[in-house]
Image 1 (cartoon, rainbow, N blue to C red):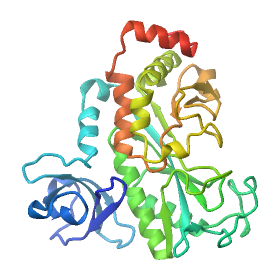
Image 2 (cartoon, rainbow, N blue to C red):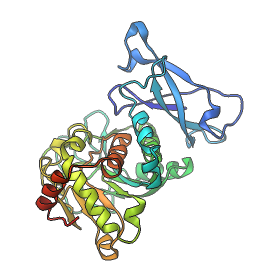
Image 3 (cartoon, rainbow, N blue to C red):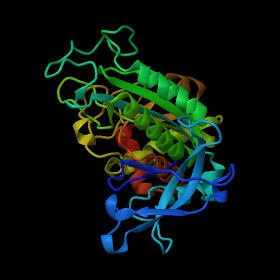
Image 4 (cartoon, helix red, strand yellow):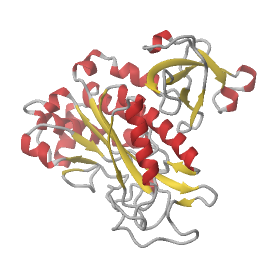
Length: 351
């Protein structure tokens, strides 16, 4: 089965083909095509979009020698189409400066399970609300945990597929779950998140439940869904790394608007300053503070090295865009000395 992203930038599309023998590497697979006019990615009179195989996973649904292949999308002339975010990310991650820093990502993918015919979260009374938030996070029990069979099936399928899934938990809002992928290096982070989303959607399809990655599926006093992205470079993980982290935070503060614009559709409904979020219009950072844009863990502060957590990305973010932008802003981009000095003062950062 070949998977790629559709015209909305968040929908996944796939189709299957038979090949004559097992393959180990994407380079052994042929290019293929599909009708881009049916996915909103090409006009009807020139509808062919070309699939380039990029990453291979074992197929947990068919087993045996069957594989899932992540593909990205090009015009017949070899130009990446606008929804192909992988192409730009691959360019950033192959830059020698970025490669030398071995960027690690740990991505926390939150999602909400919905009842199929009523567009209401799983486990919620139809047309009504469950009791307020508090008892549901990491909970056990049929009155508090809704959809564990889906979360567990997904966990097992990802492990089988070879996805770097590192954990899972029930979330604050009932019917909402999270899984973590990483640490992954460079472009692998995006490939593994997209493959894991594909597997999740296949499992919800089998269960007759709808998956939504909307960042705020239910308005009001309910947590939204994010995709917190934990990030470090080699310099951050080595002695003296906390200073490198502070410099990265400074760079991130100067490109806040650029990052927010690329961090997911509808994120303004989630980033309100409530429900463990920072306001979308303000950049902030802190140690162990979940109400900040960027959180640094207590352990990183104590050891003087480690990683940062970008809490801004929405659950529907494109992992290629987010990971590549983090690497670009913190490794390749340099602010002017004047901008840096002003930002350092504003953030009370000594760099």
